[in-house]
Image 1: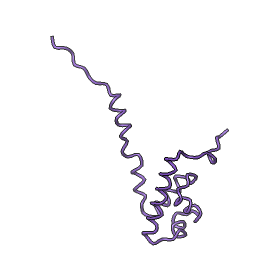
Image 2: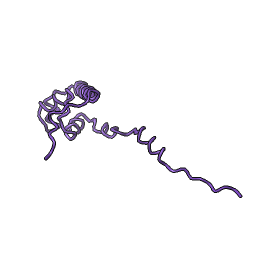
Image 3: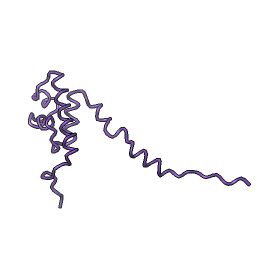
Image 4: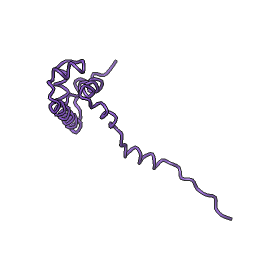
Length: 105
């Protein structure tokens, strides 16, 4: 049976980041002088969904976020997600085996 995640809350840190992302999307829309209805029409979703995105709702799918970013011509920003994986690169470097030279005889 699949686990219902609709009732679970995100950690506060993630909720805060989702709210910031929603605010940034809202500001991008306002800078372009577009209404919520215009963005919803271009993203082929409802105005309620765009409002939820702008509030940072974690229940909206990543695909809808991508369509809204595309409607705002910000879809290239999706490529910035996890681009700089400093922790992963550090862990990778630590796991690399160091070659040892044979002793000189």
